[in-house]
Amino acid sequence: MSYALLDAARVAKAAEVSLGVLKSVTETSEAHTRKVIMIERIEALAKAASESGQGVTLTSEEFWLISRNW
Image (cartoon, rainbow, N blue to C red):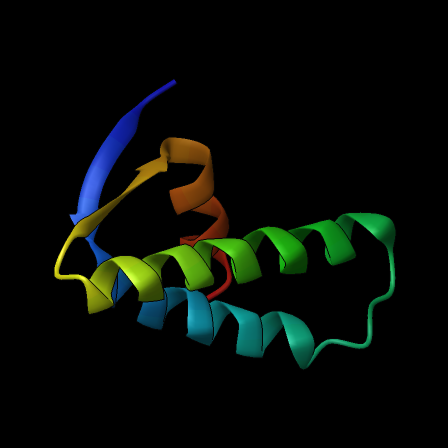
């Protein structure tokens, strides 16, 4: 599994945009709900990291999940 240290503010913004896209869909499947929950967690962690001036580390799968929906 690959990891990368990224700019937390940019990750938080990308997660916010991704959440907007996911929440605009009327899908109610379990997979969709899990995606939303995962991205909400990533957004919260990235916001906290950016407020403290640090970066955030994402796995390649987490990065793919966010970038696929923005």
